[in-house]
Image (tube, rainbow, N blue to C red; front, side, top):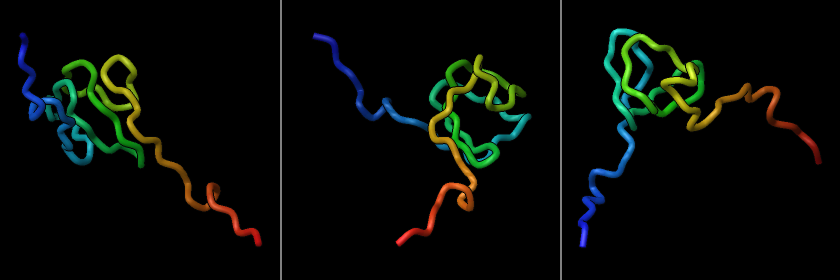
Length: 70
């Protein structure tokens, strides 16, 4: 039976996107208030380039998102 190392199944937070950094699959970066996970290893391909990045959590403008009712 095959064994899976569960410790190897995780995202790697890299902080703010930096154009000169080499990213690999499962690296996660922040760019323009949103977070992106790397889906294809790359260097210099800025999120949200869909060939290399997938949105993990999309940021928004709090002023337009929240309401005050009641």
